[in-house]
Length: 195
Ligand SMILES: *[C@@H]1O[C@H](CO)[C@@H](O)[C@H](O)[C@H]1NC(C)=O
Ligand SMILES: *[C@@H]1O[C@H](CO)[C@@H](O)[C@H](O)[C@H]1NC(C)=O
Image 1 (cartoon, protein in one colour):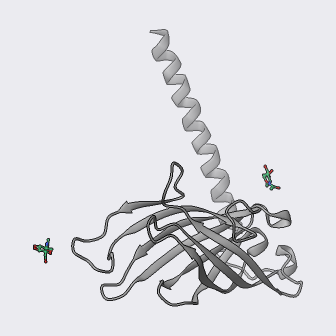
Image 2: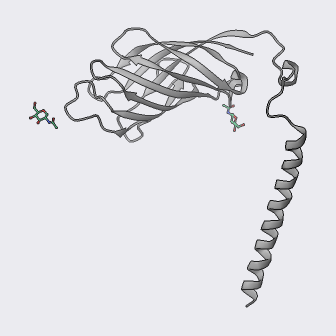
């Protein structure tokens, strides 16, 4: 059958492509070590590190037609701390406290209630910025959020783009909370070293 013939030819081409790529990459393997020292200049890291302070508002929207924070795992039964409750978020970050103020990025990630005695959340999120030269760059946060404390703090564990090699911390406090819906806006002050 002509169809079968075509298939054979197709697989032959596929196989030869694989052979080609694997032979060229093994050639590379012969000349490159697993790890080598590298000049900072090659990565543009010879300039002095900067310390920047970013301030914006994080909006956790649970209510309405377009929630940005969605419960994906319910809490364990009878837990007073919502232990286990997990939300996936794509929360807007705005310059001012109002949701309608200028959008500077989004906080994408999750938070989960991780304490059996208090209201402590594990937060893992990327601040994906769209503002000015930071458009496309992101800051990664991983930390503990004891929600009843007025000011909380979490580490900046890294970043991408203009935030390569970033480190620092974020301080944040609740600006507004709707006890009925759970909607909240939180002021973030992020202090970050980056190049
Ligand atoms: C939850 O608590 C109620 C009231 O204390 C109790 O009757 C029920 O058995 C508990 N459920 C579970 C699954 O522990
Ligand atoms: C950010 O960059 C993307 C992709 O390059 C572009 O489509 C978008 O318009 C930019 N956004 C802003 C606010 O500049």
